[in-house]
Amino acid sequence: MSRRGGIGTRGVWDYAFLVLVGAIYVFLMSPIVLVVMLSLNSGEFLAFPLEGVSLRWFGALFTNDRIVDAILYSIRLAAVSTIVSGTLGTLAALYVARHAGRWKDPLRTFMTGPLLIPEILTAIALLFFFYEVGTGTDHSIAIQIGHTVVTFPYVFLNVSSALFNFDRSQEEAARSLGASKWMTFRRVTLPGIKPGLITGCMFSFVISFDIFNISLLLKPIGRNTLPLELFDYLRWNFDPTAAAIASISIVVTFAAIALVDRTVGLRSLRF
Image 1 (cartoon, rainbow, N blue to C red):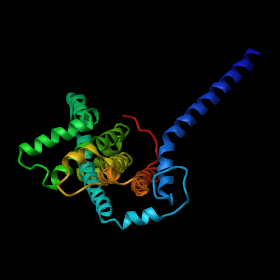
Image 2 (tube, rainbow, N blue to C red):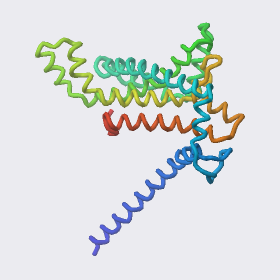
Image 3 (spheres, rainbow, N blue to C red):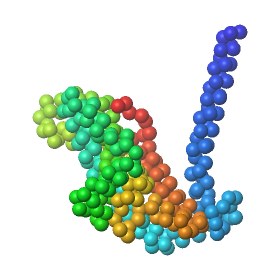
Image 4 (tube, rainbow, N blue to C red):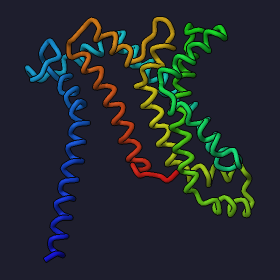
């Protein structure tokens, strides 16, 4: 009897846990689904329930030169940030994992600092720095460096995680067979850490594309990223074009997630 009761109790708790997890997912996903639905509203205002279904607001979005320019600018910023963060983050992870010695833990904390500090404080610090060196925000270099600083830890952490699980005996075997250090890295180490590198780069692209505070304080005069353009648009307009702009960000984010899943899988790596 007690045995059956135990199984039944376990089943009830498993069911309750699944219901709780499902409720959390519904709570988190409902705003995203609502925004996408509102972008398809045929009415003149952001309102629910929908008055009908139409793609007219996506047409209005892509005929708005300011919005299109903001989308292209955000993509360019995110692409450059991803390339720079991917390169620097991989090199930093290799150094910390292989050569840092007793400085490994302090360096790891330093490298992940931008994740520990509130984004707005990082933005203010960078703003003061660029004004002190005389650059200000008249050039795109300030916002590009800001995006790179914030996205760098994502590559560093993911590549470090891949290196933690990497079997170095493969490198030793390659070197013993006459491969140079560069060939060993290119043919053995890089393929081994590729899942971490791809995942880190995808995170970097998404974070850079959607970042707000850094872009708000460091953007060059007369240029807006997509989140800033959406913020400005909502100050003066309340039609479903705003939901269509938000849907573009959602599509970019989910496309990055799908790419990671198709290439390396959404599996957890030990760090």
